[in-house]
Amino acid sequence: MKRRDVLFGLGFLGTIARTSLNSALVSAEQPNSIPLPTEFQYPNGITRSRNGILYVGSITSGLILRISPNGRITTFFPGNRDIFAANSLRLDEKRNILWGASSDFLGTRNSRGEIIRRPHRIFAINIRSGKVLRVILMPDNGFGNDIAIAPDGGVYVTDSNQPRIHYLASGRDILQTWVTDERFRAKGIGLAGITRRADGVSVVGNYTNGELFKVTPQTAGKPKVELIPLERKLDNPDGIQFAPDGTLIFVEGAVETGNGRLLRIDISAKGSQPQAIQVLAENLVSPVNLTIAGREIWVTESQIRHRILPGKEKAIPDRFFVRRFRLS
Image: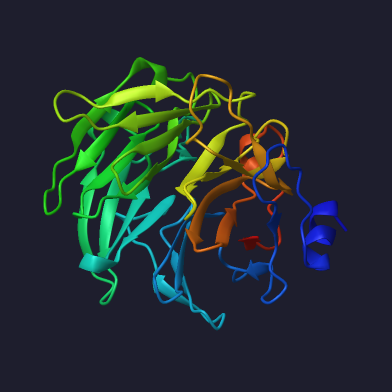
């Protein structure tokens, strides 16, 4: 049995605390892991409604699961030709819309061995009827990675191919460039996770470069972009969300090392000193996204690392999980 599975089976997860922030514990009141149906592979997008329903999407298919608070799992959306992946999911409950990004991350090989990718896009589904409301292609060969929703229904989308964040006004069908910054550019995957605070401040992560940026709207002119100083370079940051106490919770995908982690930092600290990183959990296999409600955190453990590393493409895991944590 793997060390990771032993820790989850014990009902708690020890933490490596590098700051004075509270440690994280896995709740013993409910299962620490949600096993997904055997036919569902590579979970990624995840979001939660106010009444406790989880929506989980796949990296490699458009299938979106609906998980009730009692643990019942059903298919919310089966996927189709236009929505072939759900690598990000965010819920706009006020307007009954489930937003998602559908990106052909792995692509398929043609007869000549070339990798062909379908155009990346974002989509909107009515949460009550399951009807597809909109499918919007990413501009300029963009790779729509993650999504944040504003209170007015505006949608912010990170672009992993271009050094920019897009914005879609409520009710519109055309993505606009919200902010561009050359520091967002990377040789591999650029911007990935994004979260937006109530005051409009956003935080985004550069997946390949291992950096976090704070983006602050300005009353006049373009938003202000600031690098968040950290005590070390991050190992593929992704899946970013603000916790209720204002701290930042996110994952490290750790493609090279394999030691995926759940992390927390406090970005409210003043000054230019590197900020401490608290490790809440480790030994996760390719964690990619998360959602937070109160003190609870649900993390999608994609286990997709083997599809990226040469020679391991056929080592498909037998089962996939959503991992659940509780902050003390």
